[in-house]
Amino acid sequence: AQTVTQSQPEMSVQEAETVTLSCTYDTSESDYYLFWYKQPPSRQMILVIRQEAYKQQNATENRFSVNFQKAAKSFSLKISDSQLGDAAMYFCAYRRGYSGGGADGLTFGKGTHLIIQP
Amino acid sequence: DAEITQSPRHKITETGRQVTLACHQTWNHNNMFWYRQDLGHGLRLIHYSYGVHDTNKGEVSDGYSVSRSNTEDLPLTLESAASSQTSVYFCASSDSVNTEAFFGQGTRLTVV
Image 1 (cartoon, rainbow over the protein chains, first blue to last red):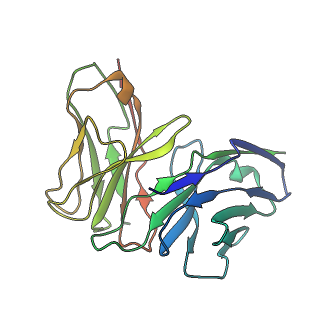
Image 2: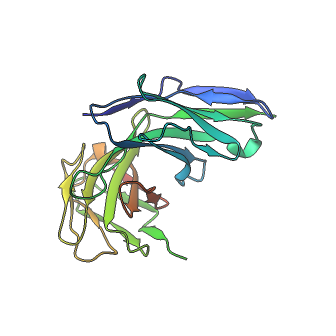
Image 3: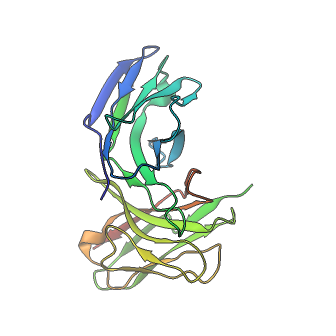
């Protein structure tokens, strides 16, 4: 079974600085997808960024980018120019590719609590 | 706009009672999921469905059941609520393997 590990329970960064959240995963599949979700205090789960395993290019969404190292099974999230609104729990998640039925559920890490210092 | 809604947002129930949490999506997605979120565990998959009349067990399915009679709804039933089932429950849906899952706003369930 696949597992997702987030080794940093909590991270703190100064506003406008850059922070990197770590995520490693374990799978025997070659076709899969990786996601970062943000959960602010409102509890809503919000997709931050998505990476397809077959793509070598790292995904980027505005101030958010990933460092996807497939051989090392590492998928870190970099947040540039941190803003107060970035404060939230961040979850790394894995989904394997098409298995003949439909979309499998996501396997989540335990999350990293990101604190933004003004 | 399409959306996914859960009801109720908060519920308190007694041990041993049957409880049903509702999930309704207007995305017309085939895939629907139920997760529970607990401190120190992140989100864990309870049940999922690939389409009408299809249901599958997830990682933590004991004590829970689901049924899918139409595309829009996937209710989650706790047959006999236990204190260990006190948690925040999230419903989600997605279109296909390579698309994101959209989440409901969550239901906080307390079993006393």
